[in-house]
Length: 189
Image (tube, rainbow, N blue to C red; front, top):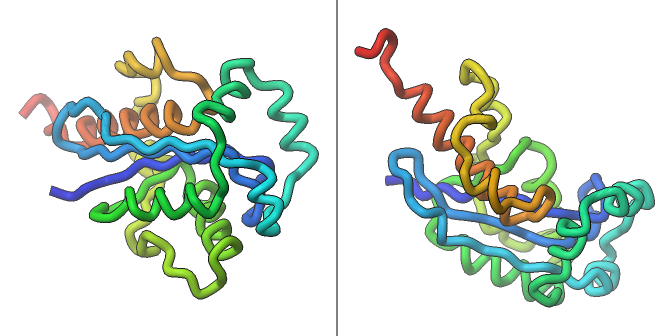
């Protein structure tokens, strides 16, 4: 059975090479309702990103100031670690995955790719293969209705919007539910 990973990041910019504040990820599969407990969540020290040449966008700082207190506080719990340490831990945690998903094909994965290259050099081995990247928006577009409003108990009760781990778990739930809808046979067959 394929091992899927959903990843989400929070950042201080919207272009590749921006400071990454946190990385959240969760292993999931399409065929069963597992607990979604094999997770990865680290916050990243801003200065360590700046020291490696990553950048900050003023409009993104303004955007963060408009987000909830819970979202902003989650950027510092657990205590932030240096970006090179977190990226190394993420690469180790990803070993054995088959596919890596993100909510959109041009943000989270692209930002992480740029960070790996900026921090470790342009020839650094990125811990996923470009052919194995998947996009939630494309799959959700194929499903009739809006699966994001189905049965996301965890997302409705405990999720903090713009907490990278909570967003990754919610997005994994969307994909599982979308896949179940797609697999249903027409007319109850």
